[in-house]
Amino acid sequence: MLPLILFFIFAALCVGGAINLLVQKHPINSALSLIVVMGSLALIYLLLGAEFVAAVQVIVYAGAVMVLFVFVIMLLNAGVEERTEHASRVAMVLGVPGLIIGLSLAVWVVSHLAGLDCIAIGGPMVMNGSDVFGNPQAIGHLLFRNFLLPFEVTSILILIAIMGAVVLARREE
Amino acid sequence: MGIGTYILVSLVKIAIALAILLTAVAYTTLLERKVVGHIQNRWGPSRVGPFGIWQPLADGLKFIFKEDITPPFANKPLYMLAPIIALTTALTSIAVIPIGPWIRVGSINTPLQIADVNIGLLIILGVTSVGVYGVALAGWSSNSKYSMLGGLRASAQMVSYEIALGLSLIGVLIYTGSFSLRDIVDSQAGTWLGFIPKWNLFRGQFVAFFIYIMAAYAETNRIPFDLPEAETELVAGYHTEYSSMKFAMFFMAEYANMVTVACLASILFLGGWSGPVFGPPIVQSLLPVFWFALRVFAFMFIYIWVRGTLPRFRYDQLMAFGWKFLLPLAIANIVVTSLVVALK
Image 1 (cartoon, rainbow over the protein chains, first blue to last red):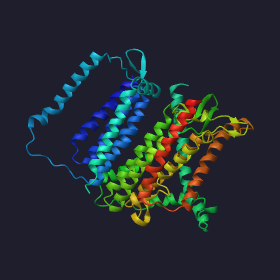
Image 2 (image 1 turned 45 degrees about the vertical axis):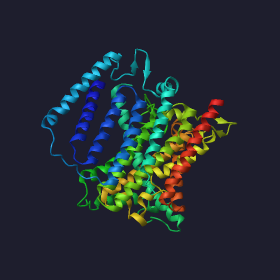
Image 3 (image 1 turned 180 degrees about the vertical axis):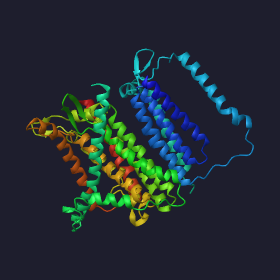
Image 4 (image 1 turned 90 degrees about the vertical axis):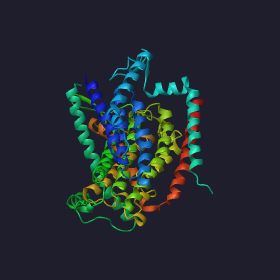
């Protein structure tokens, strides 16, 4: 019972943060709302028994990625955003609810097809009945045994992206 | 243990841990002023009580009675939030730090630690990385160029050195195979030849220890890496516009972070609370805590010693040192440690 109550509290915090992110006019407030979303996501991972993923979520997203976002906003001293004139009324009213309904339908269908119904709140994350995932050992096993090649290829892809950014950001001499 | 007893015991432990931490923070400021005073051939505070022993109380009273000023063009909500984030994150880390083995009080058997979690080290890293927002937001929301520059410097420095700090711990983790701080201490029990303790420092993590110490000095914005508050260039850095208790909160956060860093260094590299245990039962249960406190005190003393001795780095030197020296060294340490463990 307690995990379910906690889940709804953190889920509400998460959705509230996400809505606040869209509503806020100043970029720094939006960035801070995104941090709230990341933090509550981490807490939901914790409820699922995936403590390693939760910690990494906080360290990487809240602690590194979002710091850089805030950093850029501070450096550019970005001001309050302006509203464009030709906004569609229908999109403003129906856009967000329509998107939510569409996405939840998609998630429901995909999870049914993949047989992921057995994820239980408050217990260890179990896939297909047996393998526990979410703790450091399981993740290390997946990354460095089962998916070693995709993992290494992704790392090289990220390295290429970093080097590309450095090349593009350098001023012409 | 029933859930009621568990909550009661936890609350008592939280109260005791906070009291100890805040006292340590207050008296570190006195220690710092005394030791730096003696290094510079002065006496340091000596008027309030014998040897200036009530000086921290006087400082606290002064902070409380000072006028609390909010600059007119500051972003008020964030200006209020920044010191709260800084202090909260600094105090939270103590929750997972073990200060001794299990003790027995009456019928209750409990570890000397608020929460023995299996990802303790990661929690400390996560909480510290969130602490950057306190500094960054303080700099930005004050709407002053000195604060802004200090905040930018601090966040860039903390993000950069966090990488070297995190990587320096991996060698220890490879030896232990656990993120739990209690497991890490337990894995260092015992001695070689009866007198050399099996601390991680002596088990090949010598380089990692120095990387950790240097990165930790940068993380806590201490000399020789205290560029975020370089008073000759930036007045006071990110907390230039703060006064009264809000200023004091930044100060307490800085010293609480120093205590956390010292505790972590003792746990990870110096065997935690290991040491000779003897005497009657009450002494036996308290001696480990004393050995732990002794290590933490030594680290705090070195912090102050370094402050009284070294000049400040230049900013480009700081960045080059972090990225071009500490980071490759930390990665090399991981490779060597993994090879040693794999070949054993």
